[in-house]
Length: 265
Image (cartoon, rainbow, N blue to C red; front, side, top):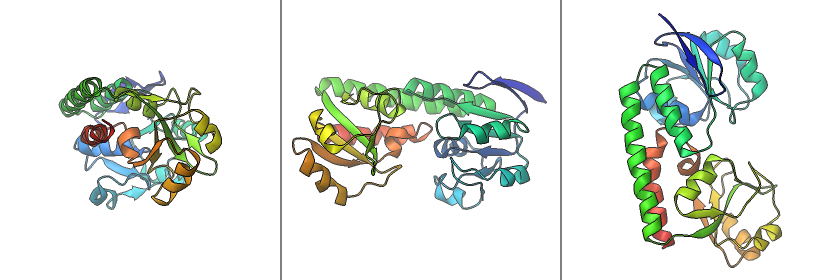
């Protein structure tokens, strides 16, 4: 049967329900769909949709999140495409929308992420599974917030996502919200992902500088370079998936962030 759904861009799409041929354009949402049990329905994913790795190998790769292979997607003949406003290119999404039902998420906070999990669960006929995931995520992050308050975590942080030029996660991002939920105040006041010089970052006097593993793969070699310019800050490598993936990965993020909090108090 056909059912109508409204995505997070307030667009109405009509799909054959439940969908049987799904192409997922975002790694964190691909992982969510597979966690919800859609092993047979996921027919296409991006080259970055690596979790879980054993299921990644079995499926058609349709390019990167920003450089989709439109013709390959057409060859797969999906009955549903699931993407994200920030991670996918508008022009490519609009091209796909001309011929296929495309459901788009738009996520800035943990609450947005939980709403997305619930809505995708309904979209693919996995409401109980999605509800259980949200229960685990809510309970875990409630505990994290309680621990941050109890242990007096109140530090200023800079979260680097890129090098040459250096770029940081600013306000109005999912990363910023996850930092705040763990008692960490972002020193960057600009929205989205501004560029910065290290000497300018030093003037902001962060207590902590997090070097993310993605999208730029910061390594141990980068720590000393930044410590030399911002010696007062504690510079740390962090797993970017735990701060920026907004699907079922949030369940694993709770334990990771708990361990991180222990290092900070």
